[in-house]
Amino acid sequence: MASWNALSPSVVEYFEGEDFYRCGYCKNEAGSRSHGMWAHSMTVQDYQDLIDRGWRRSGKYVYKPVMNQTCCPQYTIRCRPLQFQPTKSHKKVLKKMLKFLAKGEISRGNFEDEPMDSTVEDAVAGDFALINKLDIKCDLKTLGDDLKETLEKEEKKKNLKKEESNELIHSQAIEEKLGSGEPSHSVKVPTVPKPGKGADLSKPPCRKAKEIRKERKRLKLMQQNPAGEAQGQPPSLLPPKAKSNQPRSLEDLIFESLPGNASHKLEVRVVRSSPPSSQFKATFQESYQVYKRYQMIIHKDPPDRPTVSQFTRFLCSSPLEAETPPSGPECGYGSFHQQYWLDGKIIAVGVIDILPNCVSSVYLFYDPDYSFLSLGVYSALREIAFTRQLHERTSQLSYYYMGFYIHSCPKMKYKAQYRPSDLLCPETYVWVPIEQCLPSLENSKYSRFNQDPAAVDEGRSKEPDRLQVFHKKAIMPYGVYKKHQKDPSEEAVVLQYASLVGQACSERMLLFRN
Image (cartoon, rainbow, N blue to C red):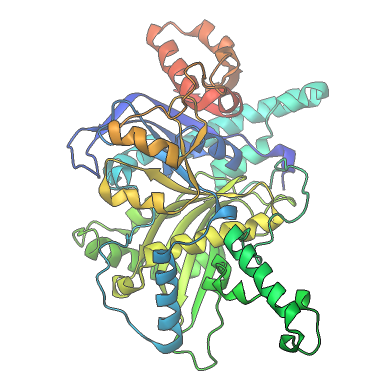
């Protein structure tokens, strides 16, 4: 096993220019534009930094919308789970689930206002031909063999010059990642000092002034009437009457006790999907059948489209390394399927990535027979609660990323209901509360949310010569690589890549140039 410090670097293959494809939102045949790269492998920290710059993955394809040109600008949105309070509509969904589990009650109301797709990224999810083509084009085995040979040479150099060992890459980790597909060992992710376990989620939020005044009045009346005291206890020890009016926590609503004779049993299991765990392999076919029915009935796909290959490449394959540092969550970091088991069978699967700072929702599919349970909303609330659970152990993991918010697409605006939430400024990559962004989006589809005109992208590429390149079985900084290049267009491509991924990622990730 490789040590934590020996975790092999991310390996990406950037595609110059922009991809044009049919927009899954407004149906424009060539209106959706994005930059893209194929991630042969990627550390969770690199992906965390990339999504904080507007990138998103679909399988192993990682893309970034060209925000000021694409027909439907897609803004990265994150919810702040530690301060999250469910709305009335959220509570209705949770109560509906509890009634179904407890008594088997089925509500057949109109659910048009309740979105069923948690974070469906139609723009790229529908372009399976592109992903399949790239999967063939990017020959993982050939690249892995080249890297293995290169790094074996570097390993020999390391033995001669131990003082340079921190600049070399460990061949064992690269071989595991790009050759056999087995996970390399964990990397120690820096954590902030833990002042405690964070907010006490079992307690209600701060009480309103009106409730406090009522409490004072009640205590005053009780002091004037001692006979009203229970068992002679002082009034200050009595539970306040207003308690029943205080909001219940998300966990209270989700995990409310069921009667012993409950009609149904719901269980949520988190299984690692990449590399596939034994639990994932054992339930693969069942998950696929749910996915196939979902695509055919909900998205009207023809029967021959939702194939096993498509399901695997889109929702099971992931470039993310499986990392299990002692400071991280018990399940580790990486890509997972959150399976919803009802009475012993899978009825829904939430595809998620667990990263150093967040849980990132990738996709949701479910059995259409259970549409009445509003599983899109229910799964999002469960994922928010799951993020809060992970935060108790790993304090810096405190956000829930919901994919993209598309203000110009009515069916995707529901994500704004999960508050407090923030949108990512497409120019300076700072987070801005969504309330401050909505007025701008009403006036223009594309907007710079950062109101400081002097603000710039602090993580921008400032020293492109430090960018790491893998070329002709050699790893070198771009400053060395460019001296051997005669193609004048090569510099423009590499500099474009550097500007999109930022300085930190450009120095850590290996950019494969053929």
